[in-house]
Length: 560
Image (tube, helix red, strand yellow):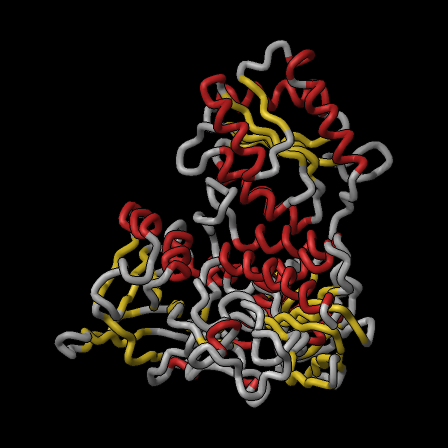
């Protein structure tokens, strides 16, 4: 049988990508000569077509052992391709084919895409320059845990808000899933197998075959094998929030021997985890996607022993002597000597008629990565003028007909990084409308058009639109802290010296020392990242504050 090894096992795959047809055929020929009997050789002549093939193989459950890509390819170079291929097959070994003049770029790629090897062209004779490298990579892959991951199946309606939320939850928690429309034959077949009539959607079939009908986030997390409740009653440190600040705190806390638990209400990564590409983060000169950065940080924290809880919503913080108790919405609780608040911020809701009713049905808040596939060939609008909106615009421009940024202010310079403004100006299909706001959203089952208003003249204009992505402002998730820690008028938590008035300690401060820099009005409770008043609102600063908060936790514990 084609595609199988002797004995019936599916052959593993070696993928090679080169835009030069002659080189592409030569690489595939040499690989088949040596490995064709036990491995399937798949060749492609562009990064896009190779990614399409990889995604199809992932859905079929094929095992890809090695991916080889030429560095100099138009539209998408080898490094950019390998970076995206990592998200599809993270365990595959990665090789960059390069000319001698490009060896510097190949060396840089070692950090960007965890490159396993780079090969200089030409590789003749292959017995000396190609086969030993591939042999070693195949042995390494064979020794790793490369078992295919069974996929979760989601059946729902394309324009269902909850179906969109389920897909976003699974994607952000990196749970492999496949989407089936409820009105198509495959989706109807799954509904029939689950003995459901399709009136209660979405329907989720977990990897072990369990059927979840209209599942909550807690149901999804449990079905995916994610921890949702604390395993112990008492810790040294509870971290609330799994964005860059929270993950940074968990990594440093656990690595320094603190019994650490991190509680996240949706998925680790926060707003940064939804970024298609972060290009100003130290150490990643070619940028890094929010998914990749989050995944690495999550794995790093887990490796050091931090316990990570998902779909775990915190509802209260209590002070009981030297103990700090965190209560969760499911009735469970965890106590600790110290707490780090890293709850981050959420996008403000767009206050315009029709928007709330169409949220999840064409109107989305920060879901550009999850919804990108449905935007192919569409005219897309993005509301917002900060970095998150700019990153989404550049990312979506790859497959959409057009992308329009709608900005209330007179320009992007006040809120967007200079490098992103340059990228937007250089990206075909992306336009910017300043002095413009959305004042209405219209549609029956899904978004069909929006109404725009010129902020200077007041003139309105209806435009056709099936997708509207909103990235406006930020509100701290701190309402549940009301009456416990001191906050400013916008809800951001006040810390350290800002708690003192005229150089004096707060009247309700119980200790004879002043609050530490990131310490709140409750001793032993610290805050890091965007939820802190006057924070920098950048990924790098959030990670740094998470690490700094742990240093202050140690200082606090030494004086208990």
